Image 1 (spheres, rainbow over the protein chains, first blue to last red):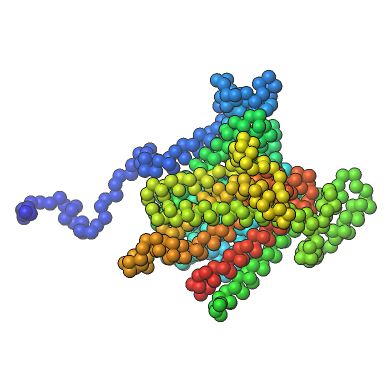
Image 2 (cartoon, each protein chain N blue to C red):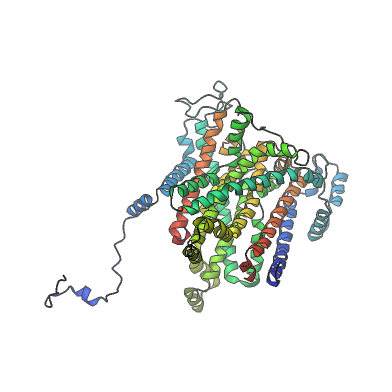
Length: 307
Length: 319
């Protein structure tokens, strides 16, 4: 049965005035930590990935204070030793503490990932936005350049550039960044192509806003989401590229530790001490996996149709 | 077999590939121009006499305009002249002819393995979307994509070449000399390379297949009473074959890059080992030749894939 409304009852004023289909009042903004907690319990793998990456970035910054030993200190009395309380992951072929080298090695990886993806973003995003927004011949020309650089295998160009400019991690990772740039440019271009038809972009143009202003204030913020996702995923690729180059002796130079060069040294002693290759390899795998997990989670969060 | 639209489409693809090819070769050409200082002095090596430097300058035509130099270089490359190694004096084209088939063999082997293993995994995951098999395949493919393949290669060497001597740890016999031996020796490197490719194939196939299976016309197939197996394998796979082709052409690029490091692990005389060696010894013409070979290979493979699209899916040609 239904309750018969009392015709004499006085309803609260606001609900009488408000039309039936009005939006409910916005909920009060919740504290950042609560929202973070909700997200973490919603997507546990991504939360774990974020924690892992925070630890690795912290290691890369605070390595000298975290590491129990000097990563380059050689001690020929303790060569290729098994893990012990003093040397948590044992020692390498020159008697250096593997655990300390692992912590310091995070610096090379983080530096490489941020440098190459940073270069890619600085080159790729503006070029992509301008090409998509301008259209016509500019777009056609930029698209051919994008196609060209997409056909360069990243590591190969990095090797060639280090061969020419001199061996070193910075040169190599800038080269990797140049190879990555077209991937970001392509995404930014595709978004800009759509966004330039939007009403608010037209409106801004009518108000006499300059092209630069429109691109930065209206197109960029709306085009950035897929680019951010791709940047997170590229971090993992960059990390693997750094490890490969350092493994080949073309990246981080000794005695500075890097996970790739640690694997290379371990390979020399694979018969004597096969356990040496586990720690740096797992470090690379876990870090790359974390970047990928975070990227996929971002993609799903930003685009619910991508599943 | 091909209609007018498709033929026009193929022509357009080929024409689009030309500027890409020119830009790419120009970038490769410019690599040597990035050498700091006077290229002639660098190329002549240490303690070179002034005559030798002048000789190099004329030999390489370094005193002429850039575009003329580029034109000459491309014309030479087309005729198979990529100058000589600074160290061994061997013609770069001869080096490439010796080592590139080895790399192509391993890359082809790896891609074959990646597809043979990745397709069933992707289909399995898509047919049970959301189930535990799907989740397992997705976890597996996430790890596969994040695995450093040279590390995986080392694990294989430790487990299957040193502990149990099933496969050789190093060395390679060209497939043209002894095909059986080549397959045997290339197995560990190919499996190490295929791991990430397989993960990629499984992942892409799953997501495109899930999308197709949820579409309207697949509901119709269901309603018509077709068995789920026929829908999946006959109609589903046919609909995602274009996506599969995209992944494979992408894999060529990735695997060519990854093989560089894996070849070093297994001491295989391929172009990866060659470019690393040449870079460490600053043997620039060899570096340039290898990059050129790789880039042209990728462009040609992409072009073939693009052309196959319009055959596999006539809708693309009409766009």
